Length: 253
Image (cartoon, rainbow, N blue to C red; front, top):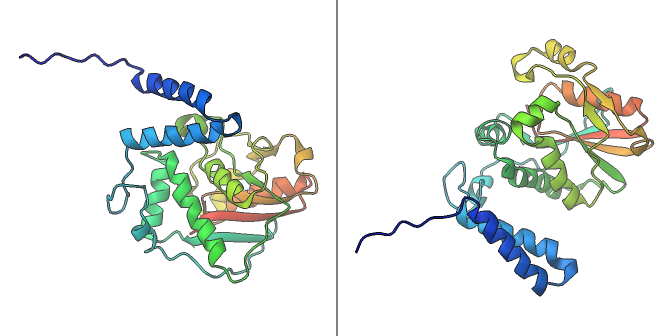
């Protein structure tokens, strides 16, 4: 018997997704539909596109528990204060090879947006390991923004994705339309300390400033090296009336 070719519609996954969503719409109470649909959608995606640990290639997640346990997540917090930042929290040093590789895969090729969850979990673990755990109630999260061309190229803002995960854990607001980047800058990694400061000078601005007037801000980014970007953003926020700004990053260089 000859093999009969099977024709699969181009939007096969979309057809299945809509079908499952329609079923859920009728069998799940309205207040729980969105949450359940997200879980079903993730389940289907996991089946079709399984995740593998970037370090050991074990199936299940992009950073498995065994590999995460090898990371030296800090259990202490050293008070940090600069001209515009009241403090700075980071989970681990950027010098660690594994964390450097993960952040590069997050920000550059292959641009794995889903790494936001395991990378943010490192920050959360850092908070949980501290004897004097920080209390961020009353704070508002603001991510460091990207210029439009970089956002279009990457498809997402890595600081915003980290901010979304932190907002869920800390149960505090996340503001995305206040701090904006108004001009393109060169990649910071290629520049000296002084050149980095000049590169980001006057690159950020405030929209809808009433949202941050008198507010305590958690300013979120992926890494902190010389601090030029976070300092410039904090300066703009402070000038617009923010009460205090604390930086939060995954790693410090």
